[in-house]
Image (cartoon, rainbow, N blue to C red):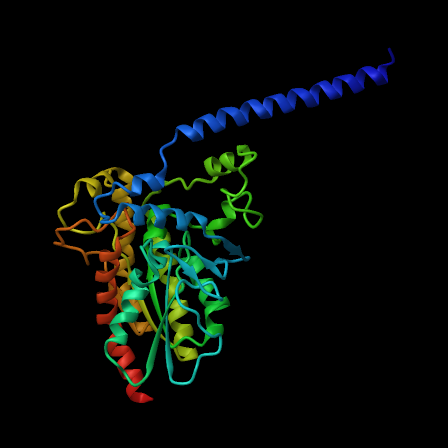
Length: 361
């Protein structure tokens, strides 16, 4: 037997062994994944939800959403329609809009992460949906259009770039920022969009390929955000970056003729209420949570400076203080009722700005 033939056999044998190993790993991963409890089934049993089936469907619809990826931020892929979520022709949650602002329309964008997007049972029960209802009830001469520009998984860097590179094309009159929680939780310092840590970003969703799960499983494990307990110097850097990004947007608003409202969102760690049995499970009382509160507190201390640049600011960290009913179904996402309470506060903060603009027109 020649050396060349022997090498060919060794090569083929090596390939076969690799295939067998890959299949073995795939089998182990499939067994492991099948043993994991379904997150969406968990939603059915949270005491924050009144309708178990709607809660499960909301969870499943959120997981089906597809995204578009750009150098500095991501957006939701346009024209997606599910039982509880509708994404319009420009990638915003809710009703269709035109790119060119119609005459007589006052346009408000709500910007933030998944909490601004809202994990709610319908487009109408998001924060933006409730805020739209509040303005519609006033029967103002000027039509108020509230647009949900929240994008799940984004933090202040992504949100800042979304405004500069996309939202300005839609002629905003008012931008409301509902932010802070993601920055404080995951302590992202480098100037990179959050999705840059995703190995397969831009090619396909993690849930799309059912035939071979290994690369997707490894991607989820390797890129799962790790909460790092930095020292106080880093806490200040995170809060300072958050402040600088919103000062930039507020100054942009001043030069481009749109108003700005920057708010710090509530988390289950910042409210003073009697927690339900499920809500209590989301509080771990560990060092990570304590430092998250420290970062949010540092952000709050920057609000007086922000108010010098922005039209208005708001600290919503204690907005749910004293509420008896469950409002959270994890440490940061709120129920439809929670969204309504937030919308009421945003209306209180934003109405004088909108009213003043209407009188000037």
